Length: 397
Image (cartoon, rainbow, N blue to C red; front, side):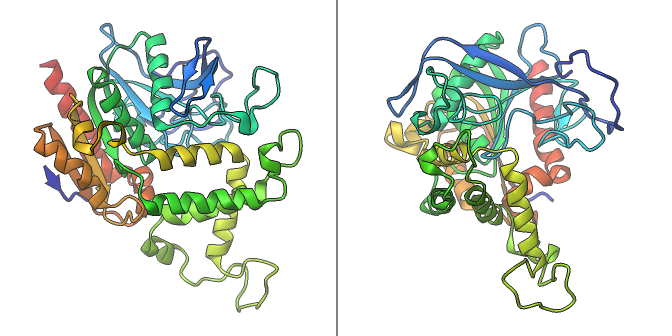
């Protein structure tokens, strides 16, 4: 079908001091799963032990059949919804508009799980984590792939006693993980919700990621990755984020939001000392905010994992990989997404149809570029939320 369409885990905490919006899961707490058995990686490296940070929302039903695994994109983490402190200035999780009671991922119905990926820097084991010698891994951390991220998640689900998920979903790199789940563990997935992504990273994707990595390498504080305990390569990471953020938007949305508006000036000051245009100031702000929460080495490792992604590589072809799948698919693309295009979505949809797999494809009219999967929740609610509701109702009949 192709269409154009316009309870969290709770712990004792102080009373909420902010006004929690209707539909919020409220206060939640990050949890940690520690694994002492080795994780053997595609690169040939091994993590003798590792940790995954994760959060859960809603209630797992008696037969453990209502779990939805949400996989995050490059800059995301396990905190997909709700609040950690209730402080009035605290921002909610990165997909708070989509996860909660009555929302797309309805926590009155589903048990939602999200974990920070291996290689990350928000509680899961990554380059900034202590190695067995007690010092940060830095570049001693082995290279990771999307397949490795999924294998670590599989162990988390085993730990939680969840044999099969009702759905696995995500946007961008999150959708890559969802597709990897369907191919690597076909008997453990009922539905894949594949949002704004591709079954194979293209030369364009690799080029953008390499540009960001080179910005980090060029920072004098990078010190070949051994910067822990000293000044971090924040300037390089900020530039990497600025470049990437441009790819997440569209020309129309940038023009609408900023145009040629000046920043704090009525006329051009003709200077290199400060931002002159509003869009320059906006990108600088995005860079500053990003370095407050992200590790430069994690950025290097995760972008490499995205570059490596080609779901058909291990099976001889995309079609051969998809022959392994046993689940139904919802594929969503956006008209203004020039990073992960409609054609790349069709590259997945067409062989799935040829194989007779149940698949819906919705190409949504939205102006905000690749980030539409995050910000266009109203447009996605009838598509993604409607799909989940129909699928759950049909399953329960």
